[in-house]
Image (cartoon, rainbow, N blue to C red; front, side, top):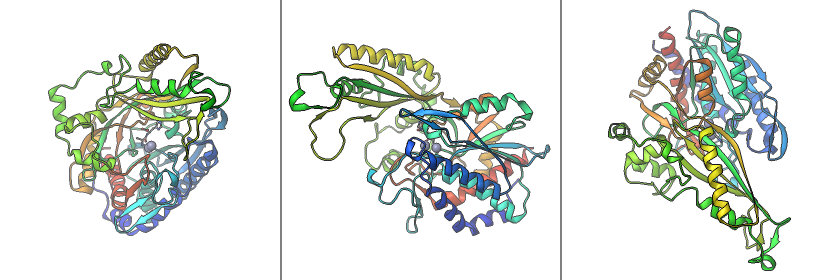
Length: 479
Ligand SMILES: C[C@H](N)C(=O)N[C@@H](Cc1c[nH]cn1)C(=O)O
Ligand SMILES: [Zn+2]
Ligand SMILES: [Zn+2]
């Protein structure tokens, strides 16, 4: 069933107001991974709940308890649940999104203030932290609701919403909440849900919309080497004591090779090599080495073979080194020996890998490599968070509806992709509600999620809002 023309033109006619609302959302620095911003995450949750209420959605803010982050006990931001429509003749779609964002500071290399949405009218870019990940897509759903309310149009499906404020920091508390709601069956918040739709990833390139049926999982590690009781003078102590930074740098260098091979024994080996037939799937995708190099901003693709690059992102695990806490990193030439340093790295997982299978291999390997250093320093290994990979059935009616919606809005068939990133709650929804989950991205491959100058193209925001609404009509038509 096509979306009504009035809905589509409402979206076009109200684009400026929608961008204004996105600017309001971006202005709240809801960084879940930084204790100093925890109140901002709460503020963002309250703002979102208020917007949903204005648009006629019944909501509930669900307390997720407390947790410890960076040695500090903090309240977890609430899950914002919403519901609108209870017509037993209609399908019920559950929408998930996250209202927290990654950290961002102008000094990281942003050209503009990260928490002030900049509308670049020449390029059509809406630049700001969270514009594409994930405030723009969440607001896309609000745009759909606003259009229906203002036009007095009946929604084609019943909607349930689940928005969280900790996705960028391990989705703490959410799995348990979903499991307990699912256990209540039809009386729970998700009772009667027929399918799930998540808009929290990106097209593969800048041209072709896609539907995503897989996500990598994640195992995130913090490895700490400590020795001296305090920071030391390298003139007074250099070559006289074991230095934590030296040990850590050696350990970190043993994790991954420059070509991406994971050096922890048993991790790469868990995943079967792709057959020629499977390779052909990646060859057929609308993608070019230029696409990865343009979004990375440099000619640094790991191979000149397109399928190898794509499989590196979607089909194989990867290990990335993220940073070292406690090390000297400022300007100047401080001659310090840091007393304690923590390396952060993570492994993106693919089936059949799970955090439970991979973590012991990493811990055992790091301990063995540390022992080889004969250092008198101390080693501590922690898992910061993790999540399992997910793959869905893309022949399901939920995907068929999204395909028809994409063809209606973008006048082209979507690519079918697997995403290199992780949204751990996806698998939780699939398993605890036993329904199909669809990833329907709004943004492009060069949006720079998690990076500097994150943006969402105006056309993706506006056409993407039409897509989300049209998808609901296509699902409704299947009822
Ligand atoms: C794909 C999604 N938009 C996303 O960015 N997910 C994050 C999840 C995460 C886990 N630890 C920190 N963030 C990602 O894939 O990195
Ligand atoms: Zn993210
Ligand atoms: Zn996200």
